[in-house]
Length: 110
Length: 115
Image (cartoon, rainbow over all chains, first blue to last red; front, side):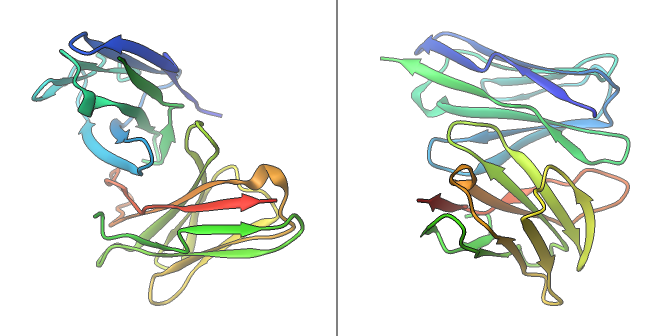
């Protein structure tokens, strides 16, 4: 079946360093959503990208949707302790059903 | 607070038993989704209901079943429980449209421990 691959599984960074997670689909996506799950919490919606090549920013977070609508990335500039958590992408197939990536866990090194 | 409620918060039971998890969606949301999240793992989509009808099925075991009632709350039934069923079970809700992908609002989850 259709899959959305998300890498890396974990990323350890020093506070202040940048963080990036990538999602790739073998097929074209209708759109892609990003969610954040804080430790001990539940996933919370961050953003949805719909258009080919779309780039959206939320403060230090930059989200991109590839030109072919098969890949997406989330980049965080100058990480802070509040950024800790797991970031999930979820791509929508042709029926608008979400296919979830496995998540990338952001860990801030002390 | 997402507006989605789940009960109970924690559930401890023994292998072979049956449990029921309950979810109340946000006011106005017609669709409910169930997910399983094992320790430090990703979200496994189980099943979606829309306005009382099953809409989509994911990796749901035959021992698991769900339903959505006329008041739109949903229940996930897990039977013949095994140790491997220990996980966090999330419910999410959305308005749902057949022609777009809605934001899903997640509840706080029910942590199931099977001993």
